[in-house]
Length: 398
Image (tube, rainbow, N blue to C red; front, side, top):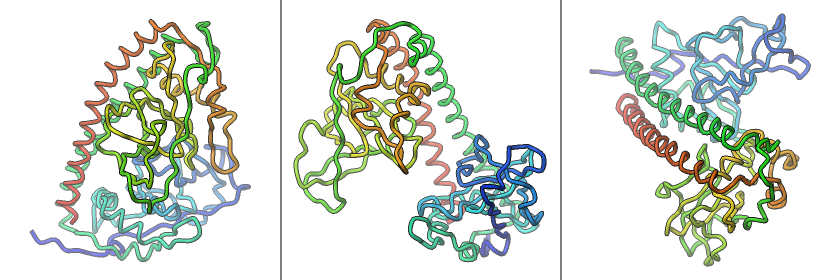
């Protein structure tokens, strides 16, 4: 079947976002308010958890209002996030794109919007879109005209809809597995509270102490990229994601050091790693238990390692204690930085932690292992779904 290639601009246009002043912000869904989407709302799906609204008088053209089937695109962001996109579903409220994003609007008589979305969201197109950015000091700004010159394969409308339906099914499979993992995480949180109570109030009345009583804390390694010498697997902030345990070491990157690090910088089973500093505030304070086995693995200078030397605490209890939202907020209260939120060894070592009976922690560990084994299977399924999606993208769009 012959497939023509056309510039993106032949079948769509960009609707630039609305700029506004702080004084234009008003309460969500109040009279004469319009929701203004921002870069934070552009996730794999449109994130409607943190909406901001502006006065309707700021919007000067009806063309700015988002329509079902628009594709929101991040047009001014850090270089690696320029071009990031999400689908706009049918909204129950009026909304417009903000100043750092734009809506890619497809002419439905020429192309299927869902097909164009899948093409734009494919790995290859995302790389091309990022390279349509003009780098300034800290932000890359997308050249919209250059992006519209990117060419996409354009079969018949019927074939576009067929391809979009196939990709929708593959993405739905991945979404269901992610939803299942989210439900298992909710189950863990609920069971933690049932077994240990509110950790901030210590509602169960357990004895309490501080981390430094039970073990030692150590900052990770800072290194230069051009160092050569000893080659080691390396665990950094980007490896945390939403994990509470880390066993899949095969996917870790390597670094080279011009010296042999001491044993203090090599991770051992049951070590707990904390993110101590990051531009993404949601990552700060996140932690996971590490199980490297006999592999030599070091860790980032943006992390803090805790090694328990006490018989009174289990790593599975500690990681879920620090994952508890109320307890994490308590930890971060004293960890605010000027521009980047951070915590340090002093903050970690002095925070009070409830210490339940070890028998209770053992029961918890057994429960966690069962749930984590189920999560592991779902994660493998997600990996397979992502490989399938990647293969389909190559088949249909390359």
